[in-house]
Image (cartoon, rainbow, N blue to C red; front, side):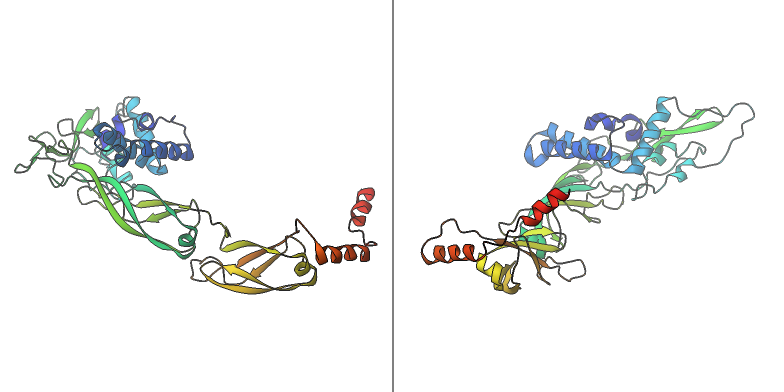
Length: 382
């Protein structure tokens, strides 16, 4: 991020959020705007593409706590007129304020250091490498893919060096020239009493180079939207709404800077039979009244595997949960969770013939047993 961006661009206004917005509010607003102005959803719309770039740039700063703090401090400083000298008798210190923030943005260079780099030192600094922006995307997996892991294709659109000019910003056959004002540093020093305040060079807009004949595709910026499809491995056991970070898979950096990271938010489709509870899978299995009362062996389906047999104890109540070990979701260490089997006693809707006769005999045989007696005793005791 150049010093000019920190000083002049209102990233809160770009996203349409207040300055005291929480990280959650900023993220929610960014996702909404990114979907609305994404180039894939607005093919051929140059304004939407430019809006998408601004939104991504604003989120890249405001989503990072340290960068947001630096940005707020820079804006506040310049809104108040910048630094002033310390008054009579103040010495001239050789202290490079830019070192205080160098590398604070994970990719080296850029950020507030560009703005304050020459605050106490009039010596110009060469334009620093700029880390590529982080990219966010989403993917939807089937229940089975989330449990076992999957390799999925992801199509992403991010900022990258313009292919037509190879990132120079100049039309083919021409080259940018070194800015005579800042001599390639991208910043110039402005006197402030005993100190000097470093600010982005207005002639080259902080790039250190001037493009006399701009590229027709990127209009001299050296950057353009780049769409690419890459195969991404989603690890086994991923859960719904989980956010996965893929280091170095985001937008390409500038001036030799490191690429940004790719953040993938995973959505998992529901399964008609199985559910998920952490590393364990869940399933509800119906059993008959005789099976629940007398016990027995029941067969239980598993996800992508053969059925297993579980022993149902006599007198099993509705809602009893049993465990089939090692039949759940895959954990990070390669082991598997369990399958939690919940018993559902099925009550027949229609009873006829011998079954009806047998049930009537059972009712007569157990007429003296009142399952609600303890309930009423407890109610009176209360």
